[in-house]
Length: 224
Image (cartoon, rainbow, N blue to C red; front, top):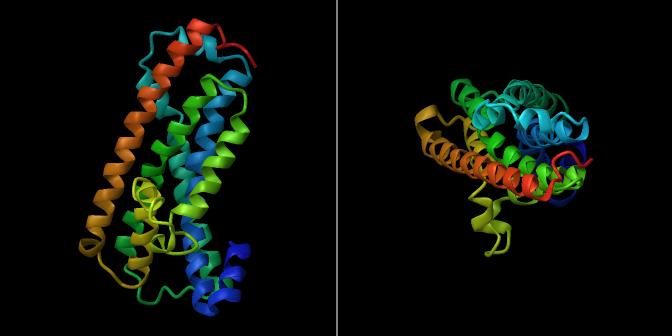
């Protein structure tokens, strides 16, 4: 947060600093939803418990979601703490904020980014490079989610990718809620966030099942 806040101040002054600080406060949810979930899937393979997990008759979807639950709660707490830092250190003003809209946005964003994390985490079934995956996935969000600069400033061909990521809508809804927009006003953004989050969750689950089949055929499930 400090790095991008001061970079924003260097380029655009105090307004740029506050813009980056607020965006990076919300981006903290991705540390849990992307890094945490990706690692939790990969750790099963690393510790050698993945084969035992996959031979159980348990529903794969419940396993998939269960790994994300604590990261949802942790993500919400992380954003709240980060918003406090954004206000105290970088002057983000919450005097006009609609806290009801802000609370709903934080909660939904914490849930929505899980789909992105599980999508990345499914690759842990076929590769040992889990660290490279979550780092690439997380740093991509820094560039294309609107956390540090508006999505409209990105190249035209990248913008559709940005709008396919739930975090993009969560960050914009947070900015509007902090500026005083009520829940009704940010509802369209939250609807798009829920829709893209559900789409990623479904795609991540299907990819998980596909990679599970591939790993079984290649005999690489227990390779660490």
